[in-house]
Amino acid sequence: MQEVTLRVAVISADPPFRAAVAEALSLYPDLAMVVSDTPALAASLSPGAIDRVQAENAEVVIVDLAGDPAGAIRMLRLLGDSAPGRTILATGPALAPDLLIEGMRSGIGEYLPSPVSAHDLADALRRAGRRVGRGYATPTVGRLLTILGAKGGTGVTTAAANAALLLHRQGTRTLLLDLDLEAGNLALTMGLRPRYSVADLLENFHRVDESLLSSLVMSHPSGVEVLAAPLLPESMPGVNGDQASAALRLLRRHYDLVVADLARPYSEFGKAALEAADAVFLMLVPDVLAIHGAKRLLPLIRRRAEGRSGRIDVVLNRAGPDDQIQRKDVEEALDLPSVKVLRREDAAMTSAVNVGQPLLSRNGGRSRYAQDMRALCAGLAVGGDVTPAPPATVVKRLIQGLVSRPRSPKVKS
Image (tube, rainbow, N blue to C red):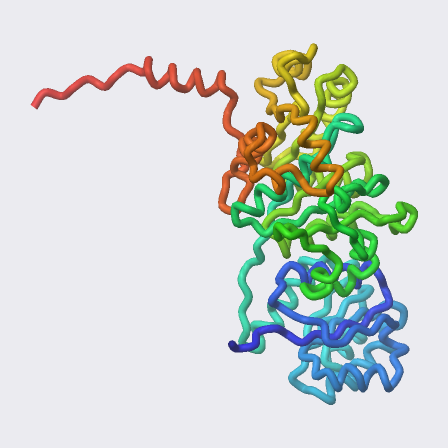
C-alpha cells in the first residue's frame, strides 16, 4: 500500500499549542504521524535536538516561534537548508514585514498567527500534503451519547454500560467514557481493572495517536473499549472548556460512538459533553426528588443543544406497575409528550453489578430491561437516524390531515 502519512516534527514549549497540534492530527488520523517531538523553545534548540529532527527525515516541521521569533527563524534556516523539500509551518506573534520575509527565506512555507486553532493547523497540513501529491478526505466524526442523572442513584452507569454493549453488537465501534470523575464506577461495572484513565489522556494530549490511545483504554470481552475515570479524583488535572471539547473531539475521531457517563453537568467536561452530544438520556427514578432534579436540568440540556437536531430523551428507570409515581405523572410534571421507560429488574441487576457483568452480557438480552434498552437506543448505531420521532399527538394530526385532505377531482377522458 502506498504510504500517504506525512512525517511531522513538532517544536514548541507551549502546552495549548501542542494540544492544538494533537487535535489537528486527530482530525485526520491518516494525515500525519509525529516522528520528532521537541518540547522546547525553537530559538534555544541544541545542536543535538536539530540533529534528531534531521535524522527522523521529517517532511513537515510545525514550529512555534514564541519567545524569540528572530532567534527561532535563524534556527529554521538550518532545518530548511539541510532539506530543501521540507515544509515548515510556523506560528507565533504578528511579525514585522522584514522579519516575516526573513522567515520565508529561511524556509517557512506558511505562517499562522497565534493563537492558532486545530482546524487551521489541520488545513495547513492538508495543503502541505497536496504539495507533495497526497490528498486527504474530510474526516468522519463519531456520535456522542451523553447520559446523566436527575439526581444521584438513578442508574446512569448501568444504563451507559448496557447501551454501549447493545450498540457495539450492532456493528458500532464503541467507547465507554467515564466522566463521573469523583465516583468513577464504570470500569468496575464492566469487571475491569484499568491502569490508565482520562487523566492520562489529558496529560499526554499533545502526542495522542491511535497507538497511544489504544494503550490508555481497556477492552471488555464484548469488544467495547473503556476509558476509565482516575482512581484518585485529586489526580485529575484542571480542565478548561476548550480542553474538554478538544478531548471529546479527539475521541470521536477514533470511534463510531462514544457513550459518556456524566456526573456533573455544570463542570467543564459536563458542559462540553452536553454541547457536543448527538443524543442525551436524562435518567430519573419514580420519586419526587428525581422529578425536581429533572425539571432543573432540562433547561440546561436544551440550552446546550440549541441549534442542533440531537435527541433528548427523559428516561424513567426502575419503573414498576405498583409505583406511586407512574410515567404519565412524570410526563405531566415535566410537561413532556412522552417519557421513555426502563422496567425494574432488581434481582437480576443487583447480581449483574456484584459480579461486574452488565445485564445485557449475562442473559443474552432476554430481560425486560434489555427489551426497553433496545427501544431506547433505536437509531443510535452506525447509519441510524438519531432524530427523535415526532410525538404521538403530532403523528395523529398528520394522519388525520392526510385522511381529511380533499381529493383532486377526476378528469374525464
